[in-house]
Length: 116
Image (cartoon, rainbow, N blue to C red):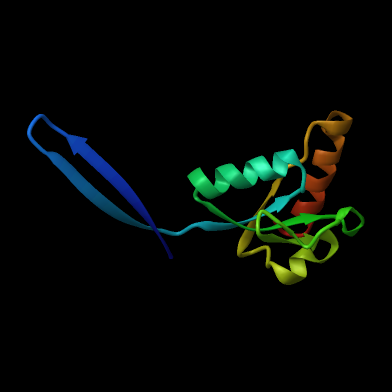
């Protein structure tokens, strides 16, 4: 359970009214496939606006060139289902439009075969 605090300020001619609204929400845990610009942008929007909580990035082992991205770990895709269980996590494939979406479709199908 995660808490999100919303701030609402209402100004009138005579007073300023301040309200803090606390919502208890359950964020879905999200794995982002990719480490490029599309992945960073997805992380930004999911973290800020979504009902998802990004927990890590994943790419094929041969594409990993650092341990973290946006302060989250980068996990080899070959091992992702042993570390982050498919029944507790969802995956978002954030690959740009290279190769006419063929790569994105391949990774989507591979993710589905792992149970995501």
